[in-house]
Amino acid sequence: MGLVWFLGWFYFYLLATASSLAEKENEEAVLNQSGGGGVRMTIHHVHGPGSSLAPQPPVSFSDVLAWDEARVKALNSRLTKKPKNDTRYTKSVSVPLNPGASIGTGNYYIKVGLGTPPRYYSMIIDTGSSLSWMQCKPCAIYCHAQADPVFDPSASKSYKPLSCASSQCSSLEEATLNDPLCDTSSNVCVYTASYGDASYSMGYLSQDLLTVAPSQNLPGFVYGCGQDSEGLFGRSAGILGLARNKLSMLGQLSAKFGYAFSYCLPTSRGRGFLSVGKASMVGSAYKFTPMLTGSRNPSLYFLRLTAITVGGKAVGVAAGDYYRVPTIIDSGTVITRLPMSIYTPFQKAFVKIMSTKYARAPGFSILDTCFKGNLKDMAVPEVRLVFQGGANLNLRPLNTLLQIDEGVTCFAFAGDNGIAIIGNHQQQTFKVAYDVSAARIGFASGGCN
Image (cartoon, rainbow, N blue to C red):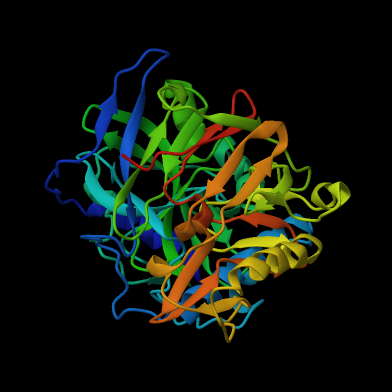
């Protein structure tokens, strides 16, 4: 394997190279609340104001939907428990996969510091990923183009590669669903994070100081120091995993702040937040639903959808249809997917009301239900997603519809033959709480302020 061939050379590169990076002030603020406190960070939308990760050149909306479909296929693949294989050279869906394509692996990112002294990087947050990774010099095989300078481990006084015999190396299979590799010449553990859509990152399992706020850091943060990262990662420096796994950023911060986090995902016109710690549960009127665990992939966040209403009336779906298919909530999927047994009556109920006011327009990509008109001018029936225990998302028009062109607005849901996924478009401007220690997920309205 090419990467392993480079490992010995890279090890001596780390020892021989030395430089200093200027310390950059992080904009994030620390929460000093009861219950052990926590940390609060700003979430940026990739297409938001002042975004450092805005695609260059801009991508088409059809490309965004193509990537979204690729992610859904990857999530479904993880839950079918297919035998592990190297996905780097196969494509499960037709998606433009130029190295470093700017479609992006997610819509939302935060800025964190890594190393001593810390240097700050724009990192995609992903509830569907466990292992965090960042591109690192010398990029022995390939690094996609990123907005920030590539992290240089030799410039960090606290950087440490992890050995093949380390407990963290042994935990990689659970975190990545790929077996760890080892370079016996330098005894460095090698990770592979593959995403089912032919995107992947490969490199050295490492430790360093993670800085999440000016006065809050995590020594010995375990992450992947990427030497070969190819696929749909946009201009980010890498991925921060928020899944339920001891190697995720959440899992590693939990000992300090508590095993919980919340976020508010903004629209492209604003900013949101990510709060880590039990303190993130305080101050909002959350309605909770049980956090369930899937036996095939326990790191994902499962919940149970029990009803959908349109204009105050329940959609005609048998209770068994809601229970038959697993449902996850995911920060990286854009469009909510529903099994056809639920999507079809839901779509019909919505069209029945909308078609009395607006003419139909041709479907667009995975969005099969579109109308003539601009979203800001439309009168849209309220859609409510109801979950076990009474928690719900009372969707606003901006969560229910998506304007794809001037005068064309589409229903922001899609039918699928796999699992149900609550996507980030439906979560926008809601506070979503993940109380892992208490096994519950909460929703609160009120925006991202």
